Length: 337
Length: 284
Image 1: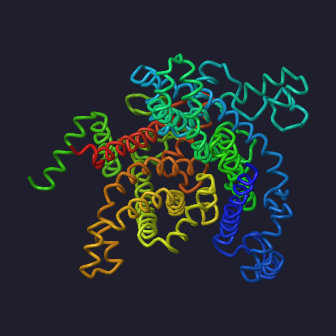
Image 2: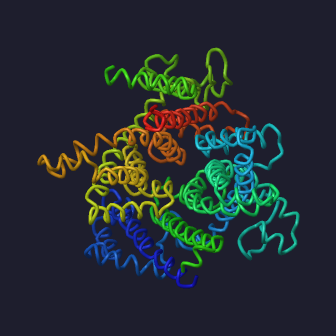
Image 3: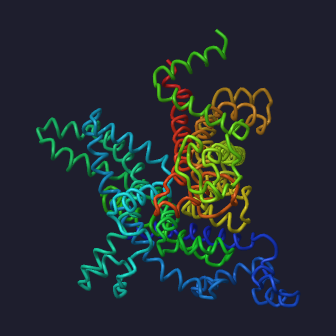
């Protein structure tokens, strides 16, 4: 298991190198002269030249790349043009908001999709199975920003059940002391149950939006994989040995069917992290997605670059965790190591 | 029976078997018509604002209501079809040409070609795809062309994977051997023997990714990339109506959003239908 883990960790390295190279070239591909761009519109020729030397843009590309990597290694993502703040600090402050939202959406989605997929496979052809298929087809066609707006209209405007869709807390509640950065956890740890309720109320709609979005692939995968497992020899043997239905489905079939589902989670994360940006924009969520969107509109490139890099690293790490989880669930993978 | 006739018969059989596919074809024709002649048949000018008629709810005069500037939403939704359609088709055509070619070369030649193509695909897949698209558009510049390029790039690995697998299984096929024996060069075999054979599968792939391409482009324009106002485009129209949702003017965002959803839904259904059409197991 240990050596397998190490081997898998080493596989991350070429991925990270690829990510860093791509983000580097994305800056160099900026239209026009990057020096003139960073100097601002009011700069004269001399100032642009100064900036060029300061940024190291007069050096060969490979030297620039080395400098870029060294900067990243020191945690220097550059400064935002519009606020002058270091990008890394801003991303660090905003990352918990995004992570909390993404994880909340994912957990909600798994909690609905997995039982739905299992029931769809067990009771093939029933109304649950049909619901399953409708969810899977409709889910992939729904633009996530549109679902979010529909939910806001119904639950905020029409029914008035949900608070106004602006950020992580309403204006009357103050943020809990920062421990993990996840409001739901921080409020519980410090015993601020009122704030917990307020934070949950704000999180619910964007969380559901993300959940609806990721429902389709998880449901489809669970159903398909469950169907395959239910048709396998060992399930037939278990049934023939007289085990009751519940034991067969939960202990035998479910555990084996989960393996392909865990693998699918990698792809689901790719979609979720992208959808997160759109949901953050709809709900004015103060995460790194809306930070990047604000920066995009003002053509402030350093935050966008930092955002792309952070998301890519996050995604690589998530995939690593999924692979490790796979090893934990499947003893066969462990034995091979 | 001639070849085209049998294909037609088979298509009719598939549609009869699964009426949803028939519906998808009908919807596709409707969307294509809107894209083709939409701008000539809409009742109002999609760009003309009318300060006397701002934020009107849907009525007989304005079927889908009017927006903050009094523009007719029905006309804007219909006219937007063409732009969204063009973005999706050009980006899919681009990735079909690049990804398809890279994929069949990788699967046919193997060796270094395969390694390089595989490495490029892996690097793209290392990013959350929408995030990469944002980064590309931000870097290349905020234009519609770059949205097309970004959408093509993030779809590249999908096309490579399909084309590579299909080319690889045909690599040592009898007809390839025969072509080689009769003196055809490798490139010639690739283009005239392998490519036509994997075309049907690639067509399914195209139809399946069209929906995703439209969603992606609309998502990018929703966050303010690519298409500039006042150009009618579904994503940007939903963004324009977003602020009005909380004050109850639902029609500004709903209709373009629903059009977007319908288009994506159509392409997804069509892809499934096409897969049935080319799937040899159903050709009985």
